[in-house]
Image (cartoon, rainbow over all chains, first blue to last red; front, top):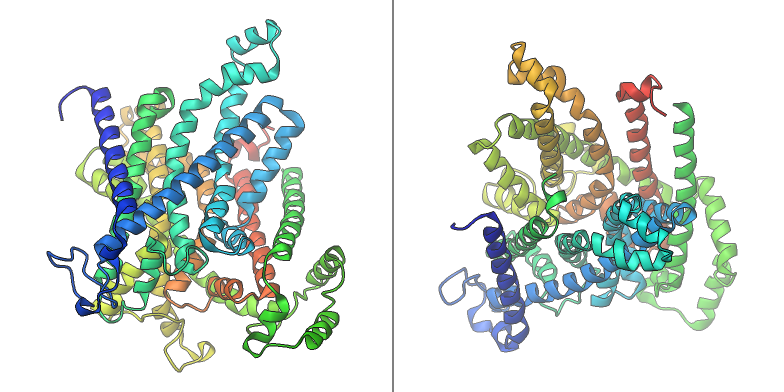
Length: 273
Length: 323
């Protein structure tokens, strides 16, 4: 690849964003007919007309997978955005006020980390009556902890910096300093944290759906596709499990590449550590 | 040192009490109906339902019921599981044995493999081996545990017919009568699934820390004294990466538990993870609450051991030089 490292990073970011957008849009505008059951061609292996083969109802697995991925991306994005905002808000609050607020924050993080994630997700999902809403809220409520900790630690060191001290001496309030000096400084880490949260969100979404607590069975989601394919593994229909999984892996890798390159661009100090 | 350990035990107890309150409250407001999941398909008339509720004390306020549950819990009575029709303590005990074997095996696999691969990555930096291991780690880190399990199942059980499809003992043989070899034979795939998915984090972190150690001044001094790379790793490197390794390896217990739920579902391995899913799907409240609290206890236990090991492994803390 030509160009210096900065150009390369920028190109990688553009390509990943383009691919993610392409899959999301393709899934959203897809005609439901294209993955509707056609019993005439059921149980077909991968071929030119059906890249990923068809299942026992003759549904085209390629179209179902793309549709499922776009659903997962939506839920993952929604969950990562809300969850990282919660992390940013709580981390900032705890870091700025310190003392009791910080103790409370640490206590909450310990509590959320103490219950195994999957149990907590199942619990929240049942509480909200399963479905997409249950999964999304479950992921939102369980994923803010690590980003919150990072934000809080960053703020504790920012608080000791000269420009923050100077700003206080000018008579600005804690809130003013937080909005004008602290948050702009943690913002790059926040954006990177948000993008890197996505792989966890989408994998937990798939896992919880796989276990039967997530999206409803009629929805073409990756977790549903994989849990259905479980019943057909023994009959040798390997394509049902392999291709959708590889696609999920591909999306996760895309988001990880995006996050790491964004960090190189936005947050060079921490990226080199 | 003892003060620190006692403080962390107290903190863990306080956290567990909070966990019990939170989980109880969440189940309380959830749409699960205890009576309905108890009687199942049969159905009850309103009159019968009222009598069941009265018999179970469901018409008492939630706070009273919480205190009843938690005092019984502390006495070792976690209630009766509705789907297995056995005391919850017994169900958890039987199943935890299986899960513990599974988790220990995979915990050792991921720990040993992670340490070895990480050291290889650091020692042979920027070589072909480094890149292969890195790609392998990134791929595993990005794939859900249950999918890795399905691939292993496809490969070893369906294609090559080497290993069993699932369960903890051969079909028709109760677990208690199965031989040790049979049990291990059935544990290989789930343990491998869990171990392989847990390996990438440990590997990458070990490689990172070992690289830092190899770049240090004391490494330069060791090289100038004539120590080879591997001698350095064994004499100085390992000691310096031990602390972060302990933290990560014991901190992974929470994820290990989550992973075991997935692996046990894929391989229909009758452990605690399987019971978790069944109890949650079928609304078995006593069992689910019991498992939730028990798993938290397990995770806190792991963190506690990490803290204690920390004080033992770090000479600075052991000698009381700092803090």
